[in-house]
Image (cartoon, rainbow, N blue to C red):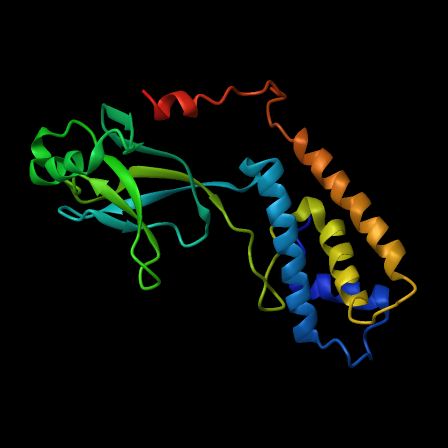
Length: 232
């Protein structure tokens, strides 16, 4: 599967629309249009098959530290799973739910030796730090590998001509979406209605492809028990 660069995507659009000598859309503006089209594709992918963007990393623990930054490329703070592994000790680090209350957090911080396992909450203290993970109790060790986090990432934003678009299966939709945005710069363009129809066709093709994009062919619907977990 070939991954295309920003330059390749922009050149394709310029060639198809004869924009090489046009002044009403600059290269910089076209780059913005391409990134907007990528954002649209990204949203559709997350709404249809979010594990397309599933990624795994680590949270580096520092002894005595409770608050940690989320991965810089996380999408809308969407965490799928956090786990702890230290030799034979393995468990899921669960999100601290409302049933635990703030006093439980206080006790976990004050008496960390009595806490059997780590738990976490997401906190948002403003623009200076953004959303962060608050660990209960604070880390009892220093380790860069004991805590593993599975999360949904953002699609790559393309700035330099050599930057690579990481949605290779759906380049045609991204390019067609960008073409429609270019036509919108010229109100009443005769090619706009047909371009919109083609964009919609490619969008539906993308969605139908994502709906069957299950790696092991197991397409049984998973039952969501989260409602029961919230009340257990």
